[in-house]
Length: 286
Length: 39
Length: 225
Image (tube, rainbow over all chains, first blue to last red; front, side):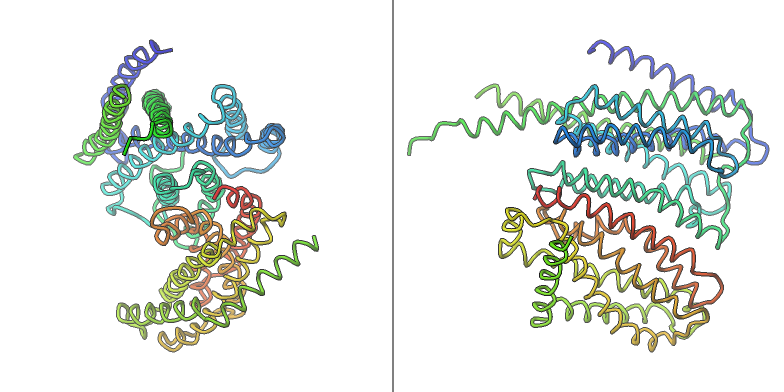
């Protein structure tokens, strides 16, 4: 397992270099925006990675709470599978907005269920909390990248740094705020049960996300705003480069998460040892 | 055009800074481990 | 089910009676809101037509800050007298306590809104160009949205450092959709340009989702403190 890390690191470095080459040089220039549009190759993969990490945080938080008792654990397993099946079925039955394919929703549903059981398989209950923390932290880092590259893209294309009704950027900002508040809670909480409280907050945050999206969407229908990136179909060559960049950033994100996770586990071991030392220390003679 | 390079640079600055924070915390943990080993 | 209501009613009655006798929360909330209204009135020209657009936002920001003042002291009294520990040990369902606290806060903040609204109308020369009755569901649903999440996060922040700042820090991001709905709904009614119906529906969904989430998770949070 330890040897895999340097191998993955080299692979990631290679992928990232290739992706940058593709993004900056090989990909065709956009007709409308010129070369500035290439920011998309960093902006969108970072967003997708951040969302994936926040989903992992949500699943890990739920697991931390339900795995406290066997009964709730088994119930949660059934519920997760039921939700997955429901999402797959309704993806084909419910009329969807234009541009979204049923297969995309079904795949996302299956992926989330798969992620849930993967996390469950590979992490014990105590470590699942570490997973939640790591996913939130690295997710915030990627989210910060999205929020910095977004205005840098908007300024040359629209002439303004920020549009309050831009649904994607504003939703991402709220997401960032929610997870930063999660991280602050973890740091400031002096209770021994920080993990439980943070998990509850994470669930609230995740429930909030669709509501945020709808509220901004309706705001936008009342106050029309420019749309960044366009909603139409993408040139297949650009899509290809976008996916390469995403893969590169996923590998990079995985490396960062892995490092952060090992650091967190080590930190917890040190803390436990220090606590034990303090307990077992013989009284000094007065 | 400058915006493009600024965006790419900013992305890497953010990522490298975070990795730097991780390295610093790791070093601090190492000193604590040394302290524990001495006891 | 009847046990739930009895405990809830008893706790709610106790809180209201305590508050009526001391008037701690309501006084500080009132004065704070008044200050906010006055300070805002220096920042914007209240007579101009544009303020009709902004007034919706101003009113709700003022109420939001005042609600935080009320929410911060929600659990303080319980903490001081070890009531929470007693509650944890007792077989009473945690939800009754939560509902009672949330409803108590709802009463306080609604009382505040009823007292402050005439002041706003006077300061900002407000007239509604749209259907005024729709302000009632917006106010009720919006206040409940703030209060239900606020009571829950107040319980979470009980044992954190800087407890008073932790509550708004946790509450504001999660409340953003509700705030957007309240502000835009109020603006829609004041300007009469749009329909507020979607915002009311959004607020209702928000309330349902987070009331259920709070009721499901409060037991866990109470035991975790």
